[in-house]
Image 1: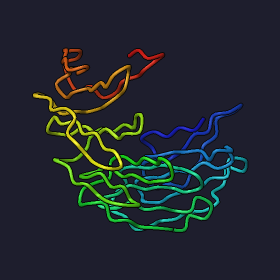
Image 2: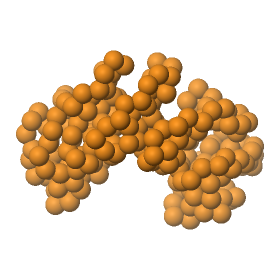
Image 3: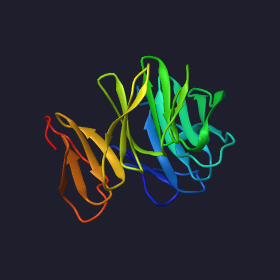
Length: 219
C-alpha cells in the first residue's frame, strides 16, 4: 500500500512503514505498475517520479512541460497526463514523452482507455484517434458503461457518447451533476444534495454528493 497526504512525502506500508522523499510539493497521484515493482508519483512540483519499490530509490525523475495536472492514468506501459488543454502520453519505463494531443481550452478531467482508444474528457469529449465533440460545458463527472461514455455537466445535462454520436440523454432541472454511477440503472449525485435515479430526484444530503459506492448492485 502506498499513501500520500498534504505533505510532500510518500509512505509505503508493508511489514514496516517507510517514507519516500524527493518531491518538493504535495503528491497528487500514485499508481503501481501491474507487477508491483514500480510506484509512479505525480506532484504539484510538476515532476513525475518512478520509484523502485524494492530499493526505495527513484528510477527516474521527469518534468514534462505542463500547466497543472488534472487527470492521471497508467495503462499498458504508458502514463497519461491530463492538463489544461492537452493530453500528454509518456513511456512508463523511461519517462520519455511519446505524444502530446490538443484537448480543448479547459482542464482534462477524466481519461478513459477502451479497446485501444484513448478518450479524454474536459470541455469536450475527445476520441483521440478520431474526432472531438464539443459539449455544453465542462464535464464534472464521467463513467464508462456497456460501450458508452456518460458525462455529467454544470448545466444539469447528462450526455451519452458512442463511437458514432453524442446525445443529450437527460436534462435535470436543478443541481450541478457532481458524479455518475451505475447501480442497476444510471444514478447521478447532484450539488443540491439530491440523488437522481430513473427520472426521480430525492433529497439525500444537505450539500454536494461527492461520491457513491456500489456493492452487489446496491448503493
